[in-house]
Image (cartoon, rainbow, N blue to C red; front, side, top):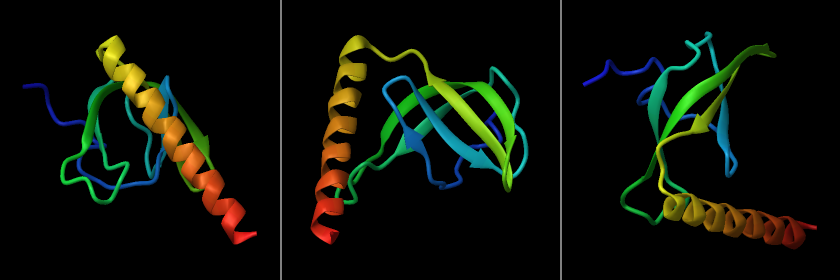
Length: 101
């Protein structure tokens, strides 16, 4: 087994896209490091969605370091399902924003 990445097992806010994931860290992480991202897109789901990602960008941002990791090793089917999931989550956020207006 490869060593656990420094960003393993710590919940944080992320920005998910069809091509990558972005988040902030308190310290820089090594470029090209691989890891598995576990996320719960719906609180009712008992198991996380798990995707492999590789760190592609690390740069200073206010309050820490911005990290961008690109999805790696997923099947076309998995990526298609991720795209549908992200679209549904986006539509849900748009609906919530309209309700609060």
